Length: 163
Image (cartoon, rainbow, N blue to C red; front, side, top):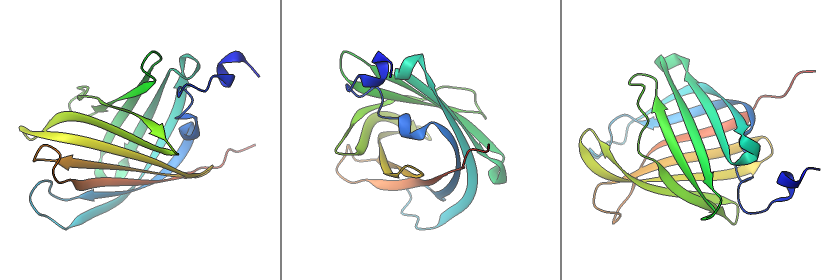
């Protein structure tokens, strides 16, 4: 085993996500509008490690919605926190990051962004449900964190390796 694999500072927290996944998406049809209607669709994700675990990248394909995006994650070794960035293929622009870490098997990440020009607080939650299942959710707060509206959830199921 190499020395990087033995480091327990948090840089290996996203190792569970490496590989290929099918994804069941559940996305709120309208955010911040007291909407209770959800859009459900399938997708795929492929994630790989970068720089010995200090970074990783995943590519997301949502073919049914003709949509793609990339997530880039970078680990701050000194602070022991992750920064997560999203790039939407429609614009090609990298969004504002969320920052956080895993504690007791749950990853919580927070940041500030704009939703159609409205300032929002953003929360991502990652839960590892086993070696072949994981769950991610996103919530926005339009009132500085007093209340939260979950607007996107993704259920990941690993695609078995062939061979």
